Image (cartoon, rainbow, N blue to C red; front, side, top):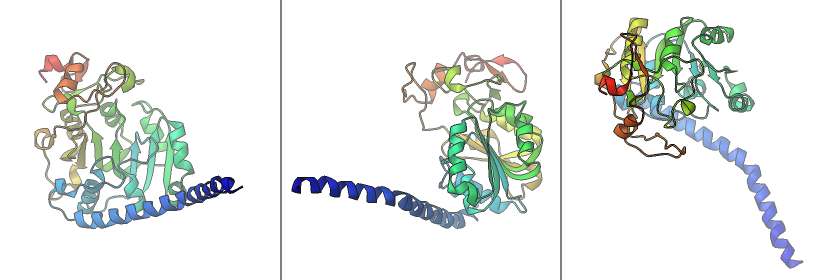
Length: 309
């Protein structure tokens, strides 16, 4: 009998711990947000955008840069759109939602991931709309408008690891004050290059390395200029560029790709068997050197080798 007491007590202890896990998670979330609020106040008036980086929910330092930018642009509409969010635990807009009480629209192709978001406390506590959809340039405006967004919004975050250039180019139903767009540093910054448009593009199938996707910083800069946006910053990780609508620039400086390009330290290239290869930028670039790319200035199809990248 004595020997049975220990397993029973252990089981009770485990059950008690499991009961406490949600409460502990909620407390950790509050602490996380409180620290973020302190950091947001500290970076609000940072004169150098690069000094504003911090992260609460963003993958890198985007939360801080965004807080800095919205503090420097008067009258920004408190609304956002972000696509490519997965389960929304890591995103560029979640801190805007919970800290600044903005309303927002998030889109992702993974319905099961967004179901998790819809069941979360965050979803009913804030004005958030989650739409499951595989985004193309043909459907993006309909998806946005059907969710009740149009005209001026505060921020658009584009990160779909594929047709980013083509989808941003197609968006004309909203006018964001700020655009955060992911660029592929492997494509360099001297040439305006993007993958050719394919509505069914999937980076995991396009090339075994998973690094054949998206657009160069120069291509996004050219598109921003075309749509009336100035490039103002890049994050220190070297994968997200920040654009501000030219009529809202104020004291912010319009920059060139060479001014903000950062050689990334992260190493996401895969081996043929799907494992991480831990390759540096040059080695990863060699893997996709002959894959087709479009020069958005000339319309010609080229590749990294031919472009001399």
